[in-house]
Length: 244
Image (tube, rainbow, N blue to C red; front, side):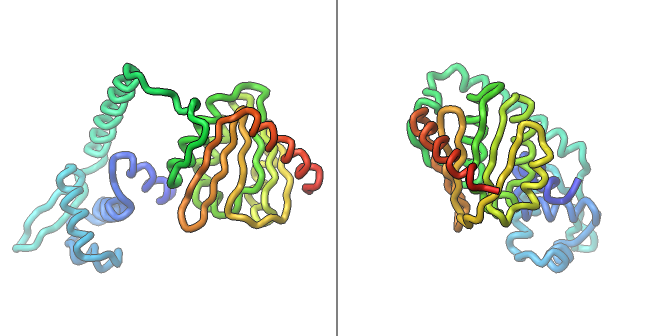
């Protein structure tokens, strides 16, 4: 498991990237001093101490005073497991509670704008959940930045899509061919390329579209409207004919 995936997993128990770096360092270097962490990880002094205090409160790191010097060490994976299980149980109870409330489903909202990468992933998953076997996802664009930042999520998304029996045709920018080549080998997937070069792209689902842009920040516009989706499908077909 590579370090990036480990940090993603640690985020599930509330650890920031800095918390994760320090926790992993303390796990690999037991009885280390804060000064050594600051020096070797090249982190801000106050942020390191704030993070160590947080990790200590969570029970993930222990602190021992030796000759008037504090030394830190990980408390081991079992404590991490207990925290994860506790939070998973709390999330399950929260979901059960929310299911009893009279919440209007998101798909009834015509237009939504979501901020950040998590917003993009959330609405993309929602739109996929409304599709079934034989439906087709169409993608126009997708700049290289989205693959560089979200490839792990995208691979999981497309595994779900193919398992559901949802087909995909994608017209990617020419500079993402190394990612496109991976997708060309998949079942239920066709890929072509155009030289577009845009930070924004369009994803057409069964009855809605996504217009994400990943520039200075990630913003996604989601539109639930079958007629608009049909219009973009027609536009896609014209592009598909000219793509290679």
